[in-house]
Image (cartoon, rainbow, N blue to C red):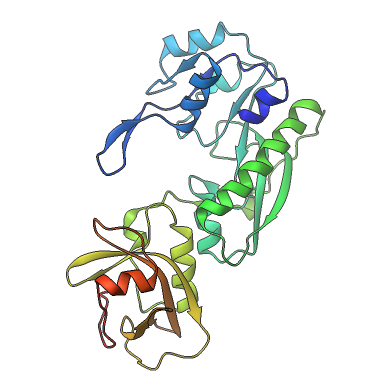
Length: 292
């Protein structure tokens, strides 16, 4: 939205989901979209659903030329899709038809994809099935997390959207035979299975950073792992989940294939800490087992 406003486009109305509880205190917090809308003095609505006739009537009175959707999280009724003269366009964080659905960024990292991208598509009644207007590839760097990749894709998406609004583009129909589905992330998926390979666990940690955060259990408590790196040498202990050694350089854990060095850890209720700080307050001895 910032790109639209800063480039002279008129935003006649902003839709965002209702405020949600967030943080340790689970206090109601406004989305970044709402905060920006309020800061810029833009008309704002937070409907629970877009299927309400009153909501549809309100939007119809705006006479907007086009509707732009980005990670909104609610289904757009067909009545709204057909309302603006230029329709509704969606900024989707993948190279469609790969990774249609709710979590394209996390799924791309989990799958070990070397690249992803942004697609601006004309929305239809399907799930990310509309014709594509513009797309651009973005490399996934070895250290990218869901957060860093999101930020890169957001910047790319803003530039593509400006082009879509300014240029006459020919829509390209998606090839459904090449489609894959990016299902919504569940917290259960973030639980580390140490019998998997070090490379797979590294991908898991990066994909679930910052939310929900990859974790293991140790002494009956949750231990979140925020940053790690696979170790080239094979683990000296064949039992997956066993701490091979722990020092200021990291906590090295055996996996199903190779070992992985944990570089940022967090106990329940504590802060995210580098190995030196973490081990100073919470020693971990070699031979300790993390639960799968």
